[in-house]
Image 1 (tube, each protein chain N blue to C red):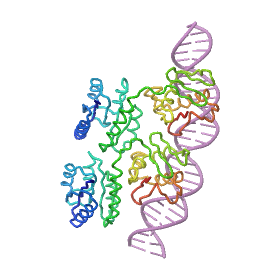
Image 2 (cartoon, rainbow over the protein chains, first blue to last red; image 1 turned 90 degrees about the horizontal axis):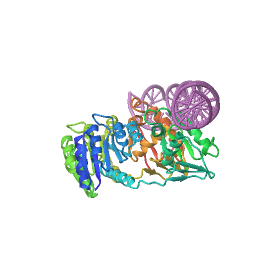
Image 3 (cartoon, protein in one colour; image 1 turned 90 degrees about the vertical axis):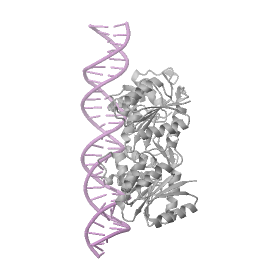
Amino acid sequence: MTRVLVIDDEVPILRALKINLAARKYEVSTAADGASGLAAMARERPDVLILDLGLPDMDGTDVIRGVRGWSSTPIIVLSAWGQESQKVAALDAGADDYVTKPFGMDELLARLRAAVRRAAPAPDEPVISTAEFTVDLARKRVTRAGADVRLTPTEWQLLEVLARNAERLVTQRQLLQEVWGPGYQNEAHYLRVYMASLRRKLEPDPSAPRYLLTEPGMGYRFCP
Amino acid sequence: MTRVLVIDDEVPILRALKINLAARKYEVSTAADGASGLAAMARERPDVLILDLGLPDMDGTDVIRGVRGWSSTPIIVLSAWGQESQKVAALDAGADDYVTKPFGMDELLARLRAAVRRAAPAPDEPVISTAEFTVDLARKRVTRAGADVRLTPTEWQLLEVLARNAERLVTQRQLLQEVWGPGYQNEAHYLRVYMASLRRKLEPDPSAPRYLLTEPGMGYRFCP
DNA sequence: CGGCGGCGTTAAGAACGCGTCAAGATCATC
DNA sequence: GATGATCTTGACGCGTTCTTAACGCCGCCG
């Protein structure tokens, strides 16, 4: 049976979720604020977390970071309409999906199923290759034309995040967060320096990238 | 069978709707004022709500907010001719569509069908496509005729909000709020500039838009 | 008929983002 | 403590994007 933890301070929503989820054979527990939510998270180890961003005691993204510090449990975020930036921040902090309030129960259930399904098969294909080079995520190795390519630690981390999200656009904030940690989310400059050096080592023509693409104003994308 | 709740205080309209909707195999219930309407809403959980803005006891937008606090049931608003600002307020409060009195039954039925259709499927895979182009929300990608379309960040954000509310009328205020943030709600001018450039990149004939439609005085609508 | 407001289009300067180079600062290693 | 690699920071040029203003069009209303 799938266990769900709901962290929300609004009683009507809490009750509605409890009833509907229980009816679908989920095992539901609840918490009304961030602090007790984190405690419940550690105590009960649920399979999914549903988190309202508008909590009385803590910022929603801080709760996410608190969880992501030690767990990769899927997190679905509830946010009010019009808080686009909050949603982005939540996703950057490590949330998996979001639902805008007011939400239809069907939509939430669908996203819940999707999150659980995604979480189950963890081991991805650990080797990603392009026509020019291959990235072995497990061995932390990059090969080009038969030979290993020497990458500095920072270069590798950057490439790893991009490779894990192949084909996906990864925002600058997300990259900075994953490679340099929180507090560096505005140092977009680092990205340019290191993307340049990655391209110099991996691209056939570094000034006209084919695999490590820039999406101006938004981020980067790795296209094998 | 689709269940419809009609909240209206005018007896002739109420009767006309009841007859016409029942003839189309809708299950109809009615309420004559805001307070009993909200009660009926909670009790009966209809699939659609048709709400007259000119109620004797409450402001129409307050009824909408009362519903939107806990439910995303589609709301179609009825308003007298010439009450533009009321309509905008209603849409901002969370209504899905509006019909101006006096209205043709065919138009109302069409909007009703559209509202129900929209509410039904929770989009698991966030890809919205038209005959001309497709929008992939997760990958942040727009494809037209097999090729990627380059959008600037602002263009993308604007399209994203419209796509997430496909088929639905989005007010200028909502768009400005989501894309430029609060404090820009009167800069309707930006919308025109960026809608123009979106149309230039996506519409087959930018001067006669088929997908990115203008609702004069109100806002815009994305119709796949 | 003429003014007014909403909408679409275009253009131009300002502001910003990106890539590049290079000079310190820091760290690891011996 | 010296050396070399790596990371941080600054400066600059270039192209893109944002912002703002101006103008034409259309429907509405006095």
